[in-house]
Image 1 (tube, rainbow, N blue to C red):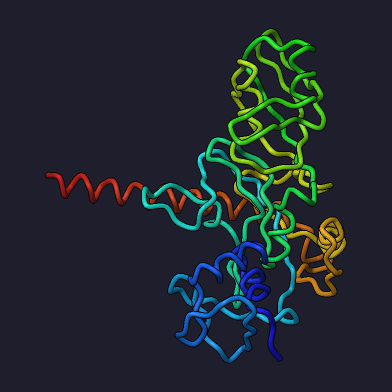
Image 2 (cartoon, rainbow, N blue to C red):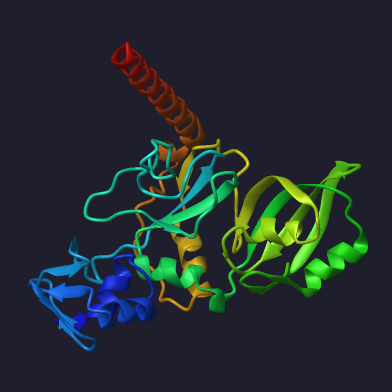
Length: 293
């Protein structure tokens, strides 16, 4: 059995099918050592490389769409590694065999809250694509004078460097004086879009946290740095949002005895990881100090 090359690359989480078509046309993809063009089909026995890096072939049948909800703390970045040694969102995630976690969008280093991960690259790309209009909700604290005229402008749309943007909904949620909290909703994931919208009105964002993606809410019992896997019903709700077929398998245990202490286990794991990270940082700092001496 063979499949279209762009479909296999999209499933591997390298980008949408359309983006992969562009990558192929640019001559960046090889098959068994030979650069190929658009329209090529591929089998499991062939070696695929993109920009010289081997891409693991995973069949559609072998892909189980798993989704994690992660409570991202401030200070973590959404890359797999960092030259400056900063913490990344992938460090605490459970290890996989024969698959990898792909982030559904990003949150910048100073933003916390709900971040979704999946093993299905094509699903991830569809969730992120603005044409599917999947809602994201944020809790945001702003510093500055906010009046109804400003809120109306943000609902109607304002001009940013990369085009017009707006909030679908804005709801005040507390605060006093010039420090106020709002909940805002949008369906795009442009870089720093929430912050840039508020800044366009002359106010500053002092706290930002994503609390919802689709109808998946951030679990208030989930500690920062903790994760939980979505069940089959939740997975299929999200897949239906982007017109993908239902998943039939899940890795989530349905036995109550195994899930009863989930929150306690998550908190212990987060605490253990944090302590281990601090110990490693101290050792590296001590080594640098001795080297300087």
